[in-house]
Length: 373
Image (cartoon, rainbow, N blue to C red; front, side):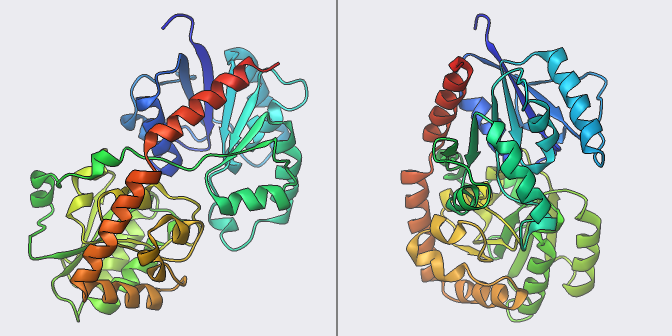
């Protein structure tokens, strides 16, 4: 590459999560002439292990403290002037200060990517933030959303025009998840061929509500002694969730793997993929489970009911442990149905959610935005 265009990506945190994994997948597949750089507001860069060829902009991390929006915005403006990107890409509410810093007298174009909401907005968008989003996002060149739910919110709640918005569904490398699980990984976690494995992949944060899944599993494990629950992920909720599992579930039936660089190493070993979030939009983990040929049992949040195959849709329901447990039971007790749904999910993932389309769309968007006056 010669003189690549510099893109600065701003995350509230670069711990492992859906937006960070999508970014890593994009960078790995993109052939565009860009130089990607990351800034994490909280100084956490755990997800750097997922991506090659990307650097942080600050060797000695200057954490932008939250709480004083004016002071934080001025600090972001100073960093923006120092690093002079050709394009600023911001992610979610946690990067709002950077959007504001590049609004009046913009130093470069801004693309804002809104993936969803955190735990404090899981039931309803906060009015103060809705007002701020409606104001700040008007200064962006484009606002990207990955779900139809968010597209509707952007139009009606933030009053953004169709020209301002870009709907880009998430995509994954489906072939990565179509093979067999890594036998060494399976053995390391003492998973046997006779086990029925309910699994999830999620950041262990409040809005993911993995505690709800543990509760649902505790309600069905006595009736299904062959079942195990495998939780792939890490975060501030790890210790409390381990304590909960020890208290309400039988010993050895709930397994925590923490973060895995290659979720495809264990995902094909699952029999059912479960998600218990309070809020989602278009989770990558569901797409990966579909590509692995798994039935999905989930709370009814975001676009999940529309993402899965029609045969799977009845099992995307409610937002409570009782409904989640009942739907898990139905799938566990009907092997033929589970196989049928898994096959339909796999076919849909391969036909619609391949990563190539997503990468091409982001490449074009970034290139066109940089070229725009």
